[in-house]
Image (cartoon, rainbow, N blue to C red; front, side):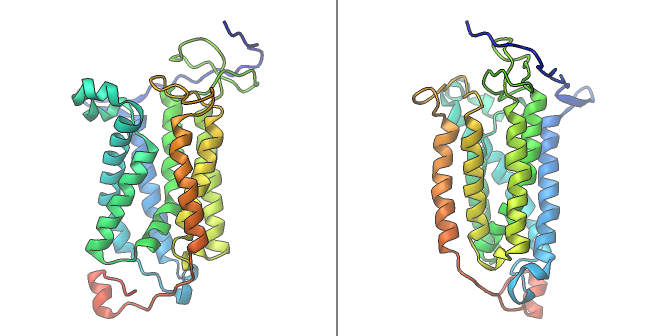
Amino acid sequence: MLTLPTLGVLTYPQIDPVFLDLGLVQLRWYGLSYVAGILCGWLYGRYLVGNTKLWPNGVSPITKTHIDDLILYLTLGIVIGGRLGSVFFYDFERYAAEPLAIFKVWEGGMAFHGGLIGVFVAMLIFCRVYKVPVWSLIDVVAASVPFGLFFGRIANFINGELWGAPTSVSWAMVFPDAPDALPRHPSQLYEAALEGIVLWLILRIATHHFKMLGRPRFVGGLFLFGYGCARIFVELFRMPDMQLGYLYGGWLTMGMVLSIPMLLIGIWGMATAKPRAYEPRSVEDAGTGAAQS
């Protein structure tokens, strides 16, 4: 049996996953994280499209009203895509045996890669309905996503799930729901820092310093590449899902496999992005919310 020194191990702060119990209704940190992520992303997206200094000729092809209307589409894409991603990518046998469990989203079980696909489909539908440029909308949303990633990983930490591999580092923690009492990497916090804070800063530099919103597809590609790198790195310190285990060699995980296409698409997006300016919207278009391209 593996034993590790416990000197310097930090105490895991056991926080009740239910932050407000109203009897028939329980409000959980997990759900609150989605609300906080969507709210912050919405506000930041409105800021990006409203900041004329970030767009060529001072013209954004997307309005704040577009961002307001987009929220419903994105929320459905996140929830439906994230849940189906968890079902098909990580635990298909369980849900095939118990189909009704698919609807128990309060128990957790949301896959980022599935949510990403859901959001992409939602944006395609939105762009077709509202006639806005697809790649520019993807760039704005991509720059706003790290808020949701940060709060989501913090919720994973509060729930004591998706813990890391055993380790002897001084900041290791013993997670109460882990199959043993070994000190482990708090990998949820690693992901919150890299996928949330660091990735947001990188995208912020791209949008504000290098004005990359003027090169549609670049910011979206940078997000995919940055997230893919961060996820693959953290997977080295995170335990794979118990029902899957390692896919190869005691190190390859499903999270890594699903992130590889993100790296390739991200590189393609950045390499093929070209400068583009948009014409000012006419009075009629500004009233209907349609954008000139």
